[in-house]
Image (cartoon, rainbow, N blue to C red; front, side, top):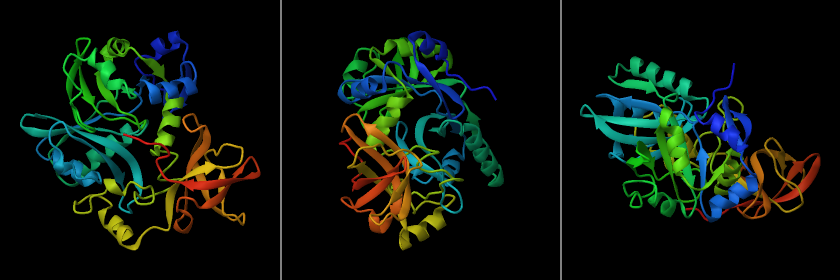
Length: 365
């Protein structure tokens, strides 16, 4: 199948971006250099085209009930303009996807939501919502609007001041995970103080046909998915398909250290299984790893104990531009999960000394 393309594919190409396939999309991986883009976000501000992310719109009399039963957090607690991070789990409590849910202004007097599944999963999530809506005989309209909206992020310590000159309405008063409609270059955009970098910043859901107008209004360094990856690893954020995968690396939220997004007092698919996990504990847990010896931990590399017994696998890894150290994420038995524990990572056939680190690796907002 041909790759899906974001609305600014040609704009990025004209700028000289390099591209990569991600989740079935042809996306810019870097514009100038991953390191320079990474540093811009940590020290100033950078903009990302994240139009590969999905957008599913849910409204109707039973919209809250449907969202509550299919996500792990407490959707009913959201007021208009609130958002929350959640897992989407199966009956066994295994993570299918993770998402951010936004409570939009009500439509026709009913609660309305936008949730953002990961790249390439929008069709599956749309089908899942439709199937369960019909099975449970709920009244809700579920629309996959991924092809109708672009999505951008402006991230970094100077993001708020930069956007103060661009956004017609003030958004500086938005708290983390708050959102509202705001006007940028004459275009109404859903604007949220959320992000995937560990820095302050905002994300914008933008009408597809107005993408270039809004993107051009942001006067900061364009950044690709390469820098987005190094930034999120430093912040300890999960990447679907690597740090969890329902088929190849099935994990529950407690193993993946996102138990904070599980509200067992609510009724959702997988709730009973996760209550048992919560009571009994997990056998393995996601940890941060820093290499002491020279080398870089990469996805798929073995993690061993000091006796060279394989105890886990690196799920994500990079050379951290901020720390100037090789870091990674991976699952290990809980007896090896305490910060400071000495482990080893097999890098290109050579055993390298490593140490368990606290996640996140850096201070985050």
